[in-house]
Length: 227
Length: 247
Image (tube, rainbow over all chains, first blue to last red; front, side, top):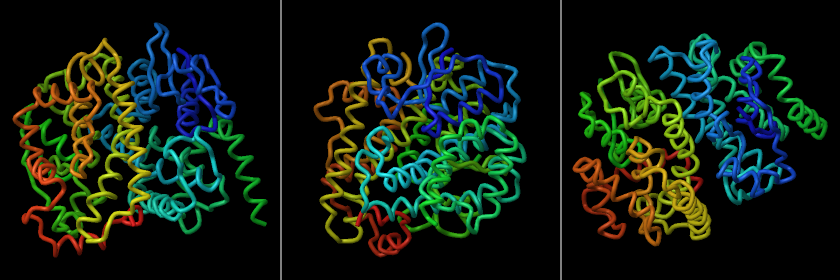
């Protein structure tokens, strides 16, 4: 199986961490987004949507969308610990609930806020032309999402969906790194968020930090810029 | 199991149709969005996110239409397999669409609809033309992707596989929304139009039943019928979280 990814992409990082943590045998193929490698005809043959992450299985079968890929991996590799995507119906539904909610909440808010602040071009590709005027809206969405995580998702449990870490936690942590790269302090007045984030890192390191080497450099630079 | 819904909401319609077509036994509980019923404390106890659709199954609460759909498939093994195939690869292709659609279809169609029709209609203020154009372009790109990529293959009749799945129902419900703002999502898109007819054929009479109010609004070219109570709508607007998007 070939895994196409780039560590600038949040869902790419999430799957990268998941694959490494569970020793899933894939061939890692880094797609240089900054170079526009995902926009070539050659890459279009690999993923018709021209995005990362995506996979091509041993028989040439292709799949895009990180959450769909997660489910496929869980069905194919039986030795992955159950808590990442529980098989019990209600436990699984609780994880699904976050995995579906996050697209138009965590993802949309954090990714577009980051895009606008950093004036990122088309490869960041959720909104065609995010402009400065839209910044307050997406800041609002991002902050509402962080508040929802702090007060609703994390209420009464150690992780987002239960007391055990699941893929929901990995993808959430990767998404909230985006605003951090603009110098925004996501943890200010959000103690539960901070504790949870450290728990996720602890449960997935060294792979989490490895996936975030570039991100952490950008965060450090943005902190310096504030001083 | 209680299913809470409002047929103004696209994912509510999708699950409604699915439940009716598969004859899954649930208690249908209408929540009136126009009357702010979803914002009551009583409903907050049902869904902490104060949205429809959601379910309560013997005390177990669940929101998010796609999560609910999967839960229904897992807890009702009698439901016909085509809606969510058991084979890992076929299932993955349905998942691929279900994950793609949030940002790929839902977001552009809904935001166009809200900017062009929902907010102006109920606030009395004219739509922000610049934003309408911006969101229209975004939506057109999404529809082009639908026509040229999702429906491009000869290998499959429907979005994911040869048979209709939940992906097809959900997609159609989303694509009906902009039609209420007088934008014909199926116009000049032959594959989209043909597929839409197939989906309706497979799910009727429930598809049309779920879309009755939608069809009324489309017919009247976006003009409100007397059914909508404007007093409640004005109050609703104060609570719309994202009204900043449209002003």
